[in-house]
Image (cartoon, rainbow, N blue to C red; front, side, top):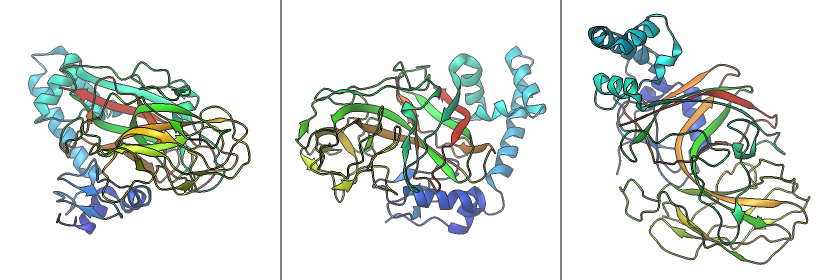
Length: 388
């Protein structure tokens, strides 16, 4: 059994507000999630407990450590500045306190990341997305169809085929394949939210299919994602952690009570015709909202199931006269919470070397976690990535 993480160290390092937000948003998720920005190997487990060793937090906070790392980067940049003009600029940026330098993460060493970053393998992706006015407190929302930067994405393709989106699909963050194949990594992510205590999940949108709402019949789904399809745990393409959710892409649904009933999937182990747990949707679900009862952001899986490999069937308990629903499969990348409005909050995969893999052609987007208020929230910031 994995060792529980020292709670005092974790709160000292991340801050109590960030720890509380992680428990609130991920406590009900069925798969362990790596906690970025924590030196060591810390995961949040189903139920909200933290396991694994934390190698910090005795005295330093994450902010203290970031300042120490920047000093090391500055020293390394100075030492090499006479050999590479690019490093003159890097050193000047650090001395001037420019926040862009926080985009520099690490693989094995500071030297390695400087080589990757100045060698054309670093990416800084700006975003600004207008959120959704939720129907009720505790609703989750999918920012895929929202206006801003990147532009609003469209609905999925019709059943049974659906679509496997990529980085070139309208609505995706402009992620580029740099370096060796499938060696992109998450570095860090700065985010400002116009409303306090809101949080986002960065995810790879790997599949979407349209569900007809004015029907109670079953609809088969035959299309499959092209990423995260391995049934072997530990494989970089493992389907474990993949999650599924219904979201409203285009038109407010009719005010009709409905449940998601006999919806089926293939699980991460390759078992077919597995039923999701029945769960209520939202009457008059707003455009952009996840069509699940308050407090939920994904379809619940069976006991011991690690993830969704593919969707095989959709069914709604009532004929909803207007609107459609996208059934989406996603793969989690990183999480960020903003306990204070209009203050940039940093989620850091740098100091801990927890550089989550991002596969080539990833369709990166944001999912707004269940909200503490109904007010539409605007999010902006910078996502930073690097490739090997």
